Amino acid sequence: MQATAGDGVDVTDLVVRMDGVGVRRARTSLLRKVDWRVELDERWVVLGPNGAGKTTLLKLAGAEMHPTTGQVNVLGEKIGRTDVFELRPRIGFCSAALAARVPGEEQVRDLVVSAGYAVLGRWREQYDAMDTDRADELLKAMGIAHLGDRTFGTLSEGERKRTLIARALMTDPELLLMDEPAAGLDLGGREDLVMRLSALAMDPDAPAMVLVTHHVEEIPPGFTHAMLLREGGVVAQGLLTDVLTERNLAETFGQDLALQRSGDRYFAWRRA
Ligand SMILES: Nc1ncnc2c1ncn2[C@@H]1O[C@H](COP(=O)(O)OP(=O)(O)OP(=O)(O)O)[C@@H](O)[C@H]1O
Image (cartoon, rainbow, N blue to C red):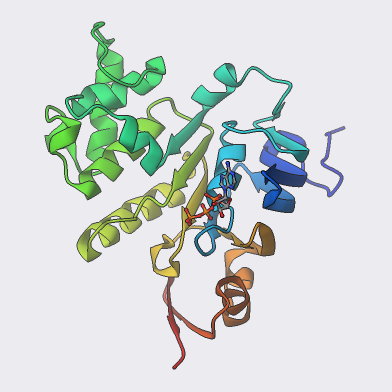
């Protein structure tokens, strides 16, 4: 008999499970009563305005933070009861906060390959040839194979984002968490990234994914589910096509928003 999460879902397929989760800091609720299930083959987008709690949610899923109330399970391990240093290599994480910690003189290939050794910053050991081949393969998949010998400090914003995604994939994670990967990119850079993330989302061997964004235009085709957050509370969650409605967007962003779908892409704007 298979163990289930109480809602018929096989728990071995659950990558993230949150039950009644809340996070409080200095009498402020960053998150309230979040119940969430992410399965192996799902690709989630978390959408909401500034301060909604998106990064907090991602940090919980990345075992970077404990909840104040409720329970968080990631890859079958309960946060608070497990060794996070064993859990974190199973999770790929990319965020602006991580980018800010990368020394400018770090070589791109080293930055990617060192993820397997859980280090950031200059690493003088010799890497295994298999590891450097894998790093080059990931750089190629992100369209930046030619940048392996460059230093991180010399890269454009878009090239940095792609490097960090390659690094996050280096350990072959079971869960990939991305906090606003398209922030700061120009139109061409954004479109290029959206298409690469779309290819990743459609790869059946790719990890479960959670992508945080402010913009519906940044949702890569192939993403399957969405959570809308406002002021620490879940406005709606479920299948992307069910959740992404004008009504839910209006409630999430507190404005009268029009939403249009063109193929697998979404566009939103405020009605006059
Ligand atoms: N340590 C803290 N103490 C008090 N408030 C905090 C703390 N950390 C975060 N917050 C607040 O919690 C709220 C949620 O923060 P979070 O970074 O999760 O939001 P977000 O949705 O990712 O926002 P953004 O889109 O602007 O990045 C914000 O209002 C933030 O100011």
